[in-house]
Image (cartoon, rainbow, N blue to C red):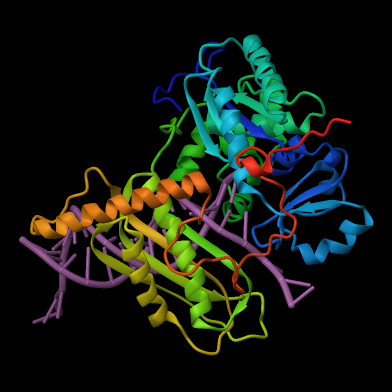
Length: 438
DNA sequence: TCTGGGGTCCTAGGACCC
DNA sequence: TCTGGGGTCCTAGGACCC
């Protein structure tokens, strides 16, 4: 994660990966003590499948991604709790974790909602163990979340260290020194498919060549890997050897594309229902775009039937719209999306999901406006920009969707089911936890 | 009845150019 | 009998991630 390719030394380059254990479930538990000690799961957006599991739920054999209807009887038999996902809460908890991490390093890279990389260069091996423990304890005390801390010379090794931390019963912290005996043993007992960046396909190809463990990948001839595989795997091999290839990313990179899509609560047969869903998605996408101060050159709309329903006719398609000029104007995007839906729509299919993608994003500040733009158009554009600002402001203060284009979105078949959502404990005044004195 | 959503990077191959 | 050889740019799709 630094560009220097120095050999590992106790005082060298160290990366920590801090990762929330069963993150979504732990966020729910932080505000609901009744959930401790019980099997708990968090469901995907449409209450469709399980996307987070407590240890107790894992122990019951409920797999990641299981469709809810398939495990429902098991759930009730064991008095397990399933909750709808509450991403507003999880995002806020994630922010709090990163706030704490900022005290331990001036290089913190949030990698996903539940994990962050930290630069811990300069510590000795002993100090690293201690530092890891302090990080873990501080987050437990201040944010009430359990985390695992993996520390190693490179990001790829830190991922493995993090796995080891989680597997050990009590520690929650693991420092991986790849030059040590213990380090070698860890790599020897790790399946190559469990290495970060080695998916199912690559793992199969590697196994056919007799490369079955992380250690064997590390020790494989460079030529073989370079010749037979892609650049990413070649980098992974170097990272396993302790040579950093992945570098710290700026703390808040602008997305290169934005997507908003949802499965419908119930299948939709009417074009106007799907259009209503897309209207919400476009507005949310435009909001995200303005949040990161970008403009989009193109917008794409897609819709699809339910691929699991083999008994129904299938149709899925997408179309791209190119704007005359890069834009972040919700109205302009809605108009484009409407035209695309009209062209995509086919009568007689039961649609299951629709979404919008904003692509070819450019920096709003540096966007090159057409030199031919008349001053009248320019005035109009500024007016629209102010309108968008006001809308964003209101929605930020009053809650998402308070102000929107077109009819309100409170109902409709496409609305996601969210039957068991927890309150927004930390981000909404109306839903603050209440303490009752007796 | 009921199966998530949102990203990134890389590569191959076509179109086009000289 | 003989039918170039590179470049660059773009896009679709694969693979992977959480």
